[in-house]
Amino acid sequence: MPNGFWDRILWVDLNTGVVEVRSLGEKAWRSYIGGSGLATRIFADLGGEASDPLGPDNPLIFMTGPLTGTQTPMAGRHQVVTKSPLTGIFGEADAGGAFGHTLKRAGYDGIVFLGQSAEPVYLLINEERAELRPAEDLWGLDVYETDERLRASLGSAYVTAAIGPAGEKLVRLAGIICDGRHARANARCGVGAVMGSKKLKAIAVNGNKRCPVAREDELRESVAKGARYLAANTKMMRAYGTAGGLQAMEALGDVPIQNWRMGLWNEGTAKLSGQRMAETILTGRYYCRGCVIGCGREVEIKEGKYAGVKGAGPEYESIATLGTLCLVDDLEAVAAANEFCNRYGLDTISTGSAIAFAMELYEHGLLTTQDTGGLELNWGNADALVELVRQIGEKRGLGELLGRGVRAAAEEIGGLALEFAVHTKGLEFPAHDPRAYNSVGLGYATSNRGACHLQGFTHQFEKAVTMPEIGFPEIQDRFGLERKGELVARAQDLMCLMDSLKLCKFSLGGGLKVTHMVEWLNLVTGWSMSIEEFLLAGERIFNLKRVLNVKCGVSRKDDTLPPRILTLKRAEGGAATNLPPLNQLLSEYYAVRGWDEFGRPQSETLQRLGLA
Image (tube, rainbow, N blue to C red; front, side, top):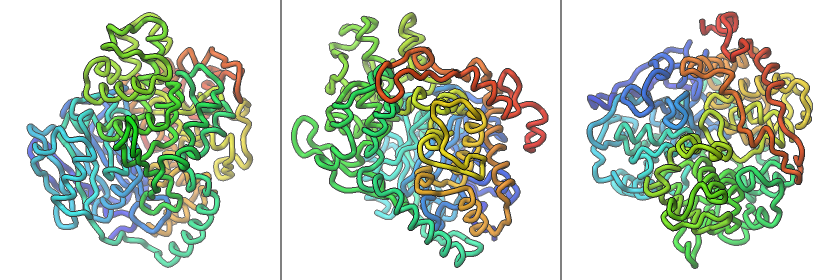
């Protein structure tokens, strides 16, 4: 029996209803590690890049990693890989919570869905069987209702991943929400719309099998030290969640304000911070499986117009995109908008970005009350924010247009609207400003799924994190240019590995190094993988994703940033005058990557990585 993985992947044909188990062999796991890497390999083998994103041939792949379900800390995660209906290129989304852990403990490493069911179904998984069941009675329910209905029927030990009405209606901003009211989200790239196109309402899984580990006693001793260190270095996040750093990040110029125009908003960020949440609506916190931080926020609003909101509180990204990006400083309204996103199954990042985009259109007269159904989309209008979330989730009114994403909406409106659409490759920006960190600008431009801070996470290397194993033993200058291309390339490779092991990236702030990752991987699997082989696997994974995108038509023309980021100096705040010199950075990056001038991996690079 292998260690660290079962080598058992569920293969679900939604056309026929047949569910079977397939194996890939240890070589595939060692070459692609698991999670994002192995899911990408399967997606490539199935020719997913040539599929219609909402058609039957588009694979929808859920995958865990070799550390998932073991005693390794911060490894309770899973990945979803598919072709994105929002961007039209390679898409993936990552989530924590309990779903991936429980899938692994049921005796399976992942699930591949192909085809489209004629009627709504859900997949039931436990240690004995996996089968499709009718879901007509679940179709139309929101995510929380779906989770509660399934667990009432199957048992409270089951964990769910489900879509809400947004996914059912094929809204391109739709995500897949796990763990019910704890709402851990595979949200980016419209993966929920892919699930909806397949008439797959949910997955419900239960399992408690012990994952095979090669050197369990040594692993226990190693992770005990690591867990104590991680917990000691992440006290701020444990106390106030990811939004605890909102005001500090605003001071650096990192927080997006008024659709990326303003550089400072002290009074607004003070009202929206994790500290303010703790003083007002916070009722508790929760952990992903294997987590030692517990950044999840439980909130409840007991009175006022948003009374009844109860569940997962907004994280930093949600507070910034639904709050500061729209100049909404009402924390309760942001919490309500966040809850509606969770219930409908929407990506809070893209949804908030679409609403801020609409507010700027309204400011310039490109949208009027006739277009908005009477809604006054003034900056800071909390009621309009909440109503637009509902319209997007229900695919009605202005929400039908905004639910296609800012790129598609801007192209339909035309003219000046294109200036206000902040995206790369069709994916709306997350809540970190590239003008505050030059590496983030390059990272957004070259990320394989479109604008994404997590696919490089380089702002951490320009703020607090060092990583000698990839050649950066010191904190980097965020406004500097030296070795930026190398930093972004090596960090992206490392993030591919963390997404494949399924390690939470917050562990980097707790002091996790490459050495720890390789040690834990070897102790779990019984391998003797070197750091060099490990890092080569990360480079292989990143380049495979790029190859898939090249087949979708991606080239240097797409590795770019919107005009607002390249030309608008905000004149105040911690990054008042900096603009990322993208073309200069991009040329160095391509050279480091071994790509040609058009951004295509050269044949020697593919040969070296085993991708020829």
